Length: 360
Image (cartoon, rainbow, N blue to C red; front, side, top):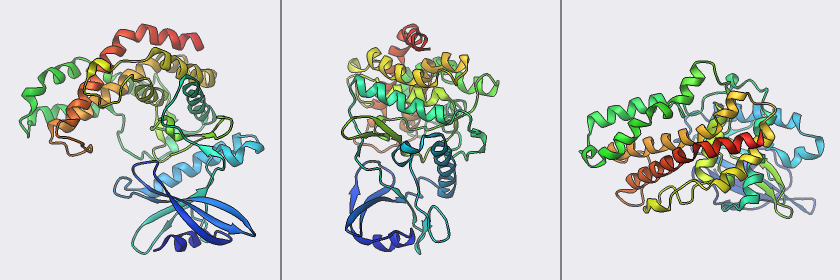
C-alpha cells in the first residue's frame, strides 16, 4: 500500500503534498508527511514498525499509549502540544493500522521547530539528564507492572550470564581459547553484573517505568532555544530499574571513545560528562526516588557496561549471529572496549558515587 493510502487510514485532513524519509533510528521506517490544510502545511510522522524485531507491536502501542496519556495529564496545558508524543487514530479508534500485507503502521503529530543531537557538550548532557529525569519523575507513580515486557529478560543479567556460560562450554566455533582472558574477567565481575537483578528480586529496589534506550538522540530540543521538549522513541518502554536507564545513558554518553574503539587506551569514563548528566538527572528524580535507588545509580553504569560486554562476547563465541558486523572481529573489539570501560569505572566508583551524593 502506498504512503498516501496509509495516511488516509489515519483520517488526516487536507491534501497530501509529499513525504521525507527520516534517517534517525535503525529499526523502523520513518516518514515525515506534509498536508495542505486550507493553505497551510500540517506535518505528521508515519512509521512502519519492524515486526521482525518487535514481534508484538500491539503491546508496544498499548505501553506507549498508557505512558504518553499519563504524561500529558501531568504536563501544564501549554506544554502538551510539544512535550509528549500524541498518536493519530483510525476510523476504528485504533492507534495503529495493519495493511493488507501485514505491515504495521502508526502515526503521530510532528513536533514543530524541534531537533535531535548526536553530539553533546556538557550543557546539552546536563539537559539530557534533566529530560530523562523528568520522564522518570512524571511516571514515578505509574504502575510499571501493568506494562508489557517488550523484550523479555532484556536486563536480566543472571539469565544472560547463564546463557553465556552455556556458550562458553559449547564453544561451537572453537573461539574460547583465544578469548580466555576476557571470559575470566567477565566471570570475575559476575557478582557485580548480577547485583541489580538480585536487589530487585529481594524487594530492595522498586519496579519503575523505564525507557531502555536513553541515548541523547532520543530527546527533542527546541531548535532555537535548546530547551528540552520531549523524550521520544518509546518502543522499548517497559518495567525496569531506574539504574538501568541512568546507567545505559552514562555508558553511551560518558565514554571517551566509541563503543567499538580498537585502541582501548582511548576508552575511559569521562567524569565531567558523568557529572553533567548526573546533575540534570538526580536534580529531577531526587524527591521521588528511594535512598537505595540513588545509591545504585553509579552501579547501574557499571552493570550496563558489563552486560553489554557479556552480550558482545557471547555473540562472538557463538559465531556472530546477533549483532551486525563491519568486519570479522567486530564483536571481539566491542567486547574489549566495554571491558576497558568496566575496568575504568571500577577504579572510579568512589568518585562516581560522590558525584551522585553531591546532587541529592
